[in-house]
Image (tube, rainbow, N blue to C red):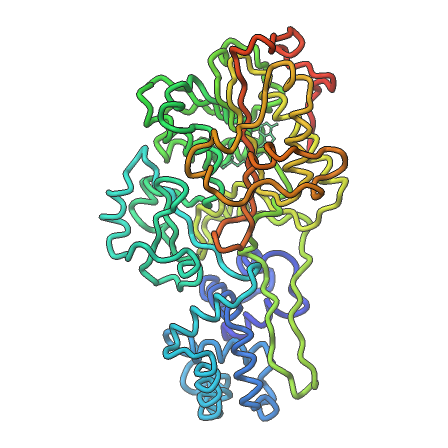
Length: 535
Ligand SMILES: C[S@@+](CC[C@H](N)C(=O)[O-])C[C@H]1O[C@@H](n2cnc3c(N)ncnc32)[C@H](O)[C@@H]1O
């Protein structure tokens, strides 16, 4: 069976549940094509669908080809013009003939449409078409953090990325094909690179050695904010990552504190889920983060802040479970703009799947590691799961849990700095949580306040997107301007090429005599109690 028929089956109306990747790799449809080939064909065709539809409609040949459906035509014409090897079918295959019979007309319409777009080459055309896609369809760069526990930026630029041209704009990189040798050194976070979205580095030595880590730019903000500038970082004693798996932020923090002169900083990494605890162990070992102590299957809320092990914990990083609404849907089954079908006299778009309630970003793929995965194995170690439906009740439940986690962190006796982050775009999980914890008894009694913008590490001070405007906050929990300005937001799919993300830092002035530590606060007993919460 041809890859084109298989792709059409996946995109067909009967087979739309689940993510694109799961549809391909679960192979419940009995498809015979190589998964890598299928995935590449569908995701590439989806990038240029509007243009291809226009060319096919103008060439107007579908009525003469009874075996060509609009989906098949789009996929075949994509490969005819854009794939390196052209149409992937033998010289006498009927699908190839169905396109080649009309090649003069197709070529003329393709050239006309390309020139109308003022593009001298097909490569220029591809870049332009990608940049024209709406933000939700636009790719974000592949962000790569250099793990300074294993390597340096200079070393990686001279080896893994030695053929790459530096300094391309992020938008150009986000639109570049996998093979484009361009990259940018990030302007906000040190040791972070932007590369073309589909570039695959999982087969490189650097990846195998843990010298490079695939991590979204926004996900690098929390550890960078928590660590602060070099002078401030010298004040760090022990750290706690309360919700750590798979460990991207934990290993980033480990790398940052390693740059201080203090050699005995311990990072406790707490993870309540059994399977994710194992991933966390794997990740910290691979990254060479020897200063991380993993607390396996440990609920952060069940930790006693007074435990003598945590007496020196000064810095806490909190990145709890959230709705994942900021995660860019790389895996979604694309809704293709299809050519007009003269046989049915109507043009049908393929509607995106409402899909399963929870879309795992690849933990399944970890288990089925034998599968010939297209995407990187690192994507299997997803930081968060994206939920596809949100209702207010669910968001409020998450919000309560998130606020409890932050308030629990406030109770650690030596704590002076806490970061709270989510990959959610919802105010309920973000500014509303900040407002709630600032108003809590424990925050007031222990002197916790927001880490003001002017006191943030320079790269994040200059980050433009701050907390949601007044009036967007929910209920009575409004933040004042200073607190709103202290919040950091990343908007998914904008020109910065990040996922949707939220971050807020909190600091405590230990020496302030006004903030007498009450025994109630020290033991973590806020008026709401600490019974724990299961989401
Ligand atoms: C958003 S993910 C963390 C991603 C991680 N910070 C990273 O950068 O790789 C949230 C994790 O926290 C864990 N978690 C949620 N609530 C927890 C709790 N109360 N105690 C410990 N772990 C928790 C979840 O199982 C999940 O693995």
